Image (cartoon, rainbow, N blue to C red; front, side):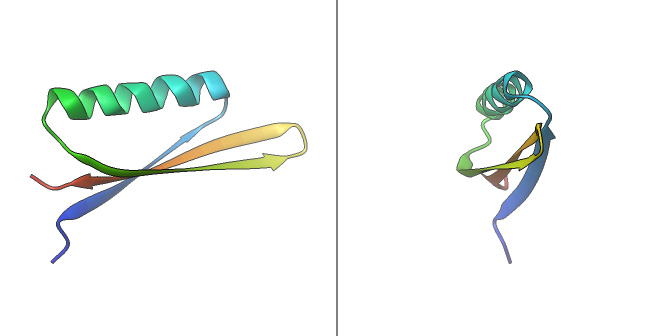
Length: 60
């Protein structure tokens, strides 16, 4: 059985991505959830950029 959960978030701007990741980490710290890994991916199609963050967090 896996002892972790995968959470995916997508953002449309670098500002939103920075804010969202910082909030996620702060929320995890406030609730004693251990962040095991963060993977980021950026996709650009023309002038549109999407920022995707994949979080691996420990289950309580």
